[in-house]
Length: 115
Image 1 (cartoon, rainbow, N blue to C red):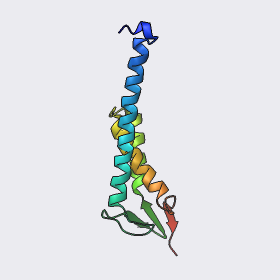
Image 2 (image 1 turned 30 degrees about the horizontal axis):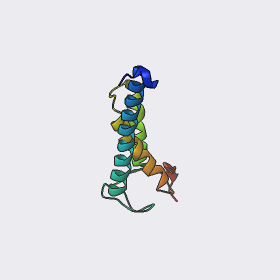
Image 3 (image 1 turned 60 degrees about the horizontal axis):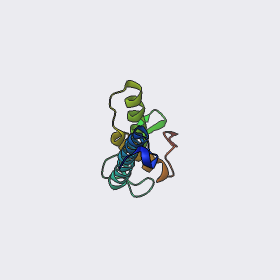
Image 4 (image 1 turned 180 degrees about the horizontal axis):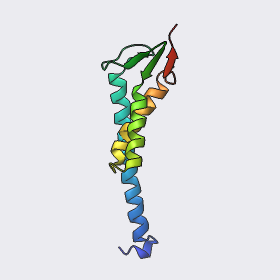
């Protein structure tokens, strides 16, 4: 079959295939990251997960380093310093961020005053 006959351009077909492959990698990475974080994190806000939360007391304040914050920091660092080029890995980190933000009410409480 002649590709020109059916109105397709080889470069368009190639770009479409590459886009689908990258989207698939990114999507699978997001799913893996989300469900891994869900499995290892606390079931609800304030509950300890399988991996202990990082929280530090600093005078009269508590600093809580949420897992989504680590994921976001890693993702930004990787993009800035061009350390990797893997859509799947970007997706995994994105999944961690998505899970941490959308599953907990206290996701934005990073620095809180101790009463």
